[in-house]
Image (cartoon, rainbow, N blue to C red; front, side):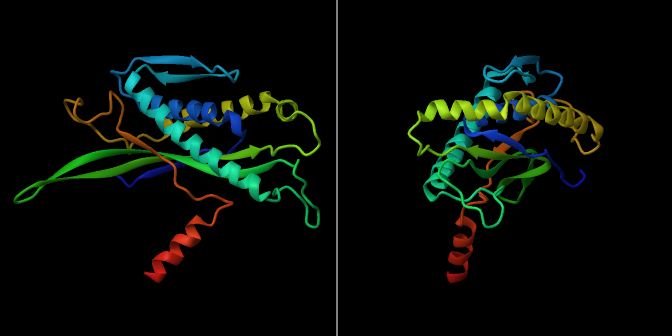
Length: 235
């Protein structure tokens, strides 16, 4: 098998409230294009965004994706609250300008989808299993955070007004471009896809190539990595 192939989808700017649906759209599309022939395809219409995307009609796969997104969204939300508390100056501010508590903030996050095969190595006394990654998709998002207003206006009304000014159509347009990229890229290069041989029932994840969804915590506004490195060097 060839070395692992890595794809990175262009970053999407999204409001905090839309993170779960945006990630669901992207992940399902990628998994759909790595499903095998025994999977029944389906099309899903987003409940909050005016967009349709392909899915695999399998409850176990959908459950795994939903659980991964729920965990990701929880981490993103917790980071957003920390960002609001620290009142980080937005990146789009020019030097010398001051941010107010009403200015939009943002955090960077990304999910990774890694496809792999499990091989069994037979030893003298026992067997060991090894996972070999052969494809990875990186899904970066810039999460726009609207801090509580200090002007005395109803915060939910202000949030709605600001989200409308951003125009949901822009987000849908951006998503459609990413879906086209996934469609084109997933079929453009296929020589690295592993051959599963005869029976695939023991080698697949409910009819798809086995995959994992992970959230590497490399947050733009966090010192987690620095503190971790300090701890390692001190040990």
